Figure 1 (cartoon, helix red, strand yellow):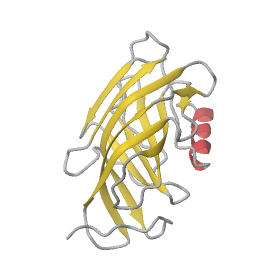
Figure 2 (figure 1 turned 120 degrees about the vertical axis):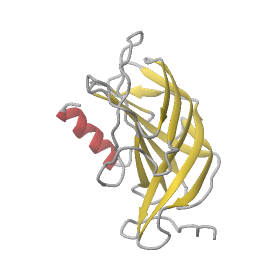
Figure 3 (figure 1 turned 180 degrees about the vertical axis):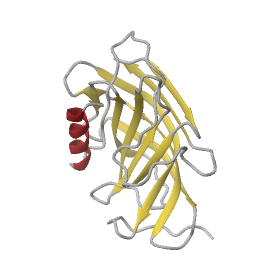
Figure 4 (figure 1 turned 90 degrees about the vertical axis):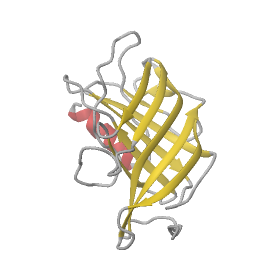
Amino acid sequence: MNAPLALACAAALASGCDTVVASQPAGAAPDPPAAAAAGAPAATPSPGCLASGDGYLRARLRGALELDVAWEDPRMDCDGGMRPDGRGLRVTVAGPSSPSGRRLRFVFGIADVAEGAAATARPTNLTILFEGEQRVYATRGDDKCTIDALRQERIGALGGPERSWRVVASGFCTGPAAAVDGSGRILVTRFDFATRVRFSDDVPHATPVPAAP
């Protein structure tokens, strides 16, 4: 990804926009997507998503790009935490890298979800980035996609200032993510994922829900 696009994506995410996508023209054969985390709390990246090995992302993309995504551990990276306003979750999931260096990442901004809480019917902002290309697609708001079911399961150490949760969610979009240059649109008709989010006492967040004994 070139420097101007990287800066644009970083600026969008920093301002609270959780969406970012770049795509290939319709009809082009996409390279296998690749691994990268975006818009998530700073951390040293590591292969795989969950230590249990059961992370995944499935998504159906139609429009400017026709693609069915089916990623599983350990060929994906993921991370996440609270959104900048502390009133929801930001989840990043990236797939495997292609030989040409292309990679695909999804950033979900899920409204009004507290640490550890289950949720239904949550408005969701979606960003999709095809790294190594020049186009970015975004819903530019959380009125086009919905998380219809979400649950969180505590993983890792139970004590300390940092906490990790396995997040399992499914959802859909009724409106497309549009290219920032106006060149096309992508509709994600369905998505499902299991990924990791992390919370820290140093980062503002909504009141956590205690883990079940």
